[in-house]
Image (cartoon, rainbow, N blue to C red; front, side):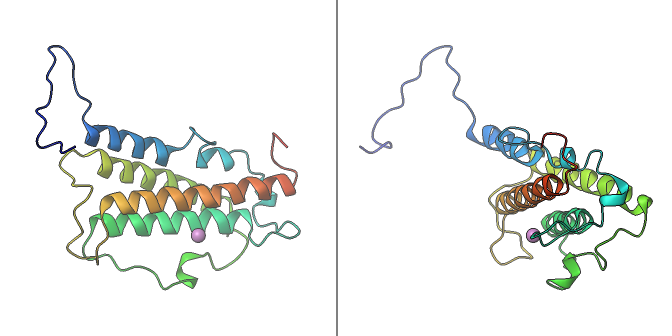
Length: 176
Ligand code: NI
């Protein structure tokens, strides 16, 4: 059946949901997390300072490496999504911290704060009704805001899972 041929029934008092508003809402929920799993920040809460550079048997990264990697990748996606002049770090070394151990407690807190701030900024981009979700960036090669939001949510969820596994293995996860 062709939808063009069939006149749409209009019933008084029924409001059709706006698919774009709905999509933006789902993207924000996806990025915040907390629907299918905990939020990224929850995996960082009460991470003992003396375990932030610790490896667990059989797992490839420390907490500091996972946090910094997620922060840098998110910052890169955010800047790429809003800044034509953004230059991405070298891959892969630019996306990981130089050492498995944070240089200090302040560096850890700074990284956590920057992660939260950049996530908020990305959400602000997505909820701006003037921002086109599906228009390719003039500076990219086909990427759109929708694509970047999905890549970011996927990347954050992947490394969030790693953080929880790491904390379980190190016996510093409250629910283990
Ligand atoms: Ni990654």
